[in-house]
Image 1 (cartoon, rainbow, N blue to C red):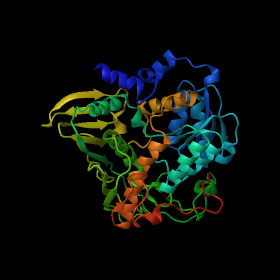
Image 2 (cartoon, helix red, strand yellow):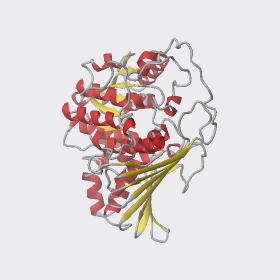
Image 3 (spheres, rainbow, N blue to C red):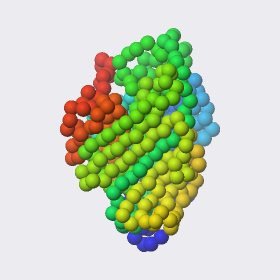
Image 4 (cartoon, rainbow, N blue to C red):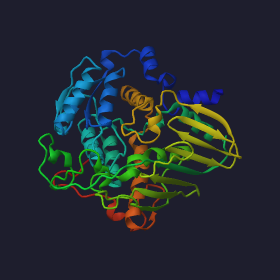
Length: 444
């Protein structure tokens, strides 16, 4: 690696101390005093949330003080898991609003269903807590605007969990692109493949004894309990989820936008279909093709195939960046550099990234998440250190997913103001802001 690239990795995208970002090296090289420990509460501890609770508990410089969930079974399971990792016994809380009142936490981790990410994050900022929020950062573009306002108003550190931004090899590869190694970049192709099965058909029924259904709905307009929502299938219902685009494309299109050095597009075209299990409750597309067009003529494409499982270019998910002198593939495993004829000429492999994170793993646990969390902790302790994915950046990439969903639902392209990301056409405006249960609309 040349000196320019070394300097970039040390000082730019991942902040100070990036060479020591791997947790075991970081912990050995920079001992953290008890006074520097960041005390956290984790909100939403099923699946990904449980993994995050365990990860915050094990990393140096963090302590999990509270676990919060509307599912009493999940609370007990996560508590037992965290207690095997850290000496401090976390307390369990059902209502996140009670957690936000606690004085003995510095930050909250949000891994709830999508529709509660921004509302809880906004309330957390107002309560003086820093925030680590899973992607997507919001359920609508309007919520993203409010989230940014809250972070700025209350001067809080807010990081979105698109952990590939903390990949050393992705940072290195993107610096190579910046240095012109593939020439002038003009296009990025991104993809995701899975083989999701039918979710079947649910029914309206009594609320299970282990679930606080009112709190699970949170800011959403109330409805009777439907047993095909909890705990994962909510992803495929517009009221609570953002589809595969918000669920998984957020990662790849964020990397593509980062690599091409882009902000807001000017037009979004989205075509999709529900191709399999058509009689199931699944409301959304399971196959979709999206194009984001930018003012400078560059484009980003995402192919989402939730029910094919067929890999592209040897990976279930990834980004291919095209330049006039070559191309580069960026995945969670690192980068692969190609010459203009498509011949591989260089490769950079990320350490300790499990192969399952390349496609169908629903938890997504790997060293990239650990590095991302460590960057969050660094920025909380030292405000001069840059976040790898601050809410301002995370919201732009999240909005790309919203645009895709809005264009799909409208059946027409969206026109967008490249300066601020607002809509310049009537198409999509009815989806800019959602509906809220009385008293639950986020306020800044």
